[in-house]
Image (cartoon, rainbow, N blue to C red; front, top):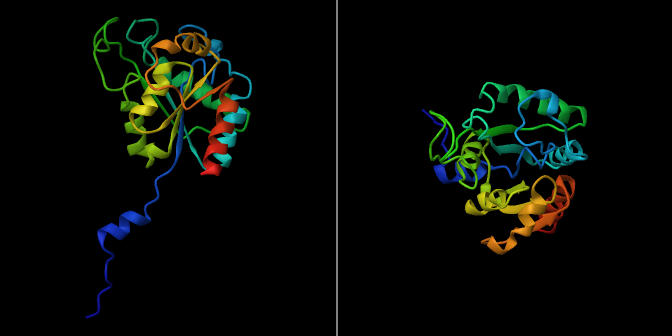
Amino acid sequence: VMSAKLPAPSSQLRTFKRHRAVFMDRDGTICQEVGYLDSIERLRLIPRSGAAIKLLNDRGFKAVVVTNQSGVARGFFPESLLPELHAELARQLRQEGGHLDGIYYCPHHPSEGNEPYLRVCDCRKPASGLLLRAAADLGLDLQASYVIGDHYSDVECGQRVGAKGILVLTGHGGEALAQKGNWGTPPDYIAPDLYAAVEWVIGSVEKG
């Protein structure tokens, strides 16, 4: 009886291609920084955010939001509000032609707030738990990926997993830049906004 020969595991692994991703912070990077975003009515996109994400979609990058939401821990809004906010974020981005492949958030805070959210966790940036979770869910190559945000913690979060970190000067980016004396490894790039950051990502990948 003839049987089909199965390929060796190593060759099976080689044929599984992991995706590049661009991870983006939410508040101050994609949508306007309003303090704690506690209602759908206050959610406004920063100009060109939708176009930036469409550019990623068109170039084959996975577009993923990773956001610290300690307002949950602090009792400013319930965790149940986040799915509604994220549905509205996705809707507004769709109107501009952009599509998100995933949204991951951390509701915890290590020293402020209420149980069960008051705790040291592995998901609050600059910890890399959200990136690791997304990589497992979406089949991502973290070392070929990028993290964009308006805090140095976004940059550091990416660098911890071998991704490139980009600081944008929207949101709290100007304040982060003013604190550059406290940075460990500087960002790989500093961009005026998300769209300019995405243009740099695409350019750096095309240069190889």
